Amino acid sequence: MRTRDKRTNSAWAVVAFMCSALAGAPESAQAQEGVPATPAPQGSSMQVTPLKRGWLVAPDVKITQVDDQAATLAGGYVGWVTDGAFLVGAGGYWLANGSDDREMAYGGLVLEWLARTDRRIGFGARTLLGGGTATIGFSYADLLGPMAPVAFGGPPVRFGHRNGRGPGHGFDPGNLTDRTLQVSENFLIAEPQANVLLTLTDWMRIDAGVGYRLIGGTSLLDDRLHGVSGTIAVQFGGGH
Image (tube, rainbow, N blue to C red):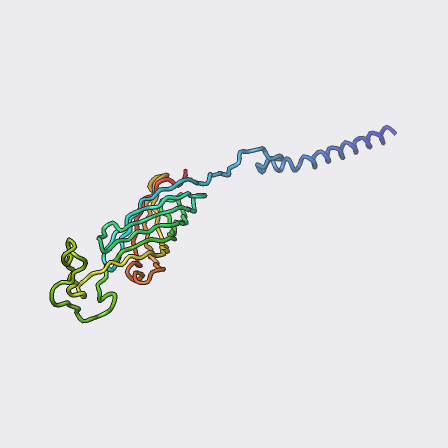
């Protein structure tokens, strides 16, 4: 009986040893492969970058043609940048090298989409939607087409009385085909453009692009005011 008990105890000891070995095998394998049995808490490698938002101010110059003459439009825009990618604001421009018979000014809502503003070179698209006013000089031939000279012979036509006794100041229309008339009209404008961005610092960028002025709502000045323009602006701000 004692021999049988010893054999039984030995068998149970072997079974216990084998169970212990099997239970410890995975941990040993993980230890050998360099994989910890229980993952140790580690710091996250994910980087969180706050989205840029804030006010942006941009003086702007446009090189273009107005009434088939070289023109410089000066102005700028200001707006609020959301998430570093979209600007909503307002802007305005006026003809810097105009004259009495060539004037133009306009303004309105400015929308701009910005991309890659965290890189040295980026791009974007901007549009202005609004209205303005312009004055352009027209000759009689421009307004009425070719016509024969209209001349008045004899003394000038006089209006009113001078000191209540005689004719007043005279007016001699002369040759009407040589006269210039100033036509002033209000207009609607849509000015889309594509831009390239050069980031200089966190708060300053160069914005250069090409756009086109679409003019509507006039009876005479549409063809005199629309056209292609090259533009360059310096953007300040826009969030950090």
